[in-house]
Image (cartoon, rainbow, N blue to C red; front, top):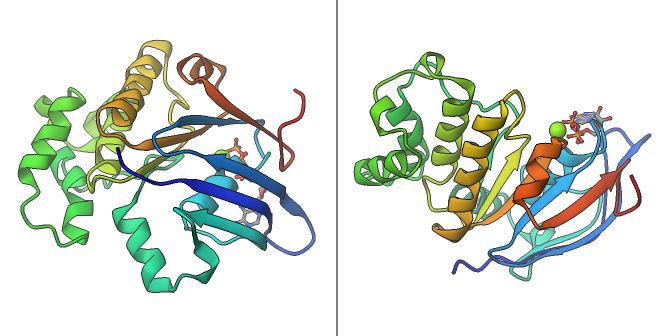
Length: 222
Ligand SMILES: Nc1ncnc2c1ncn2[C@@H]1O[C@H](COP(=O)(O)OP(=O)(O)OP(=O)(O)O)[C@@H](O)[C@H]1O
Ligand SMILES: [Mg+2]
């Protein structure tokens, strides 16, 4: 199992000092858990994922990854965590249209200067039933297939934590099922802690551990 305990202590975030987007978030996510952060549009889900993924920093409060206070890490250390420990499936899947499926999945390994990644890419593409699409380009794929490529790419550097932002947006039920099964695989077979932000009710049945974000406050009623 990959070890990555995530602890947020009284985390606040505002973008412009006027409006608090996250208001005193306390949460503990254990290694190898699979967690859903649900909540309406604008409730702060993407903001929260960006903080956990070390893409952005809180205005106040602390985030601990395996006991290390991320606020005390250097830019270099944070960049290394982002590259080696965290995989992200963005809200808009962000595949590069000029690269094939194979090249898209290989890209994070190239950035990490891992030169012998071809076998790993093949393994990932097979795992997610994408092998036959290896030399296709993203715009030749369906939404569900593209989303699976995004999951495969996020797993390329064997991350400890996989963050996914609205991964089922614009997918029908069948593709939602395929993509959610891909996340379960990432969790069970690849041992990644999986944190999914979504307002899609269809996602809820796949995940036992749920947090509800309401106007920047965690918990509370619907
Ligand atoms: N970079 C930014 N600068 C200023 N305000 C921002 C920025 N990013 C988000 N916000 C504001 O923060 C609030 C929360 O946004 P966020 O994207 O975290 O919500 P969300 O829950 O992910 O919504 P959705 O379900 O629509 O994706 C919104 O009011 C948004 O306008
Ligand atoms: Mg969002």
